[in-house]
Length: 225
Image 1 (cartoon, rainbow, N blue to C red):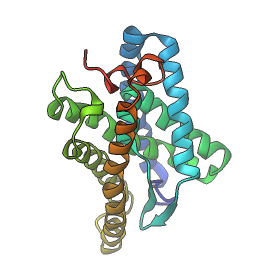
Image 2: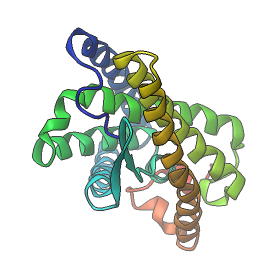
Image 3: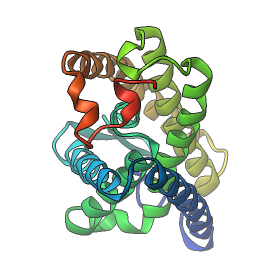
């Protein structure tokens, strides 16, 4: 989902700093709430694990450039369900930064756009989950329909932000629309795979309910109390 270099240039890139700053503030607010709920050690441990997974998603899992960006199996909804919104957000931001600093320095100028594209759909996912999941339902009891809704919302948010950056940078041109269209079509594969991964991960967590008590997973994963 990395925005290709050259899509947004010059003074226009300042907008990405603003959107990334807004996303960072929301992530810090979520982290503060999580600190009050479960403490620093749990927040840090979940963030470290999420960061490692995100880095693996970017570097190890298959990824390929299509149109205006790259197609990655990011599994944002999986991170949200396993670790909660704050660790998932910080893990996405940190994993993306580590990848850029050590393996893809050409992506660093686009960091603001990329982190916005990853985090804003995650925060939207938090809102959507509160609407479609009842308060007394642990995540391990989610149906395929619910996980599909979550993953579609997250991945759809990514495609929407990529489209925004492309149109913002190059304007409403036939070339831009074709590039966005090819990227969106390629991302359909991710939308199909993502909920299946969620179901498998949740099934594994359900078979070992002690996972929510060892600090590296969100308490809501196996208990809605």
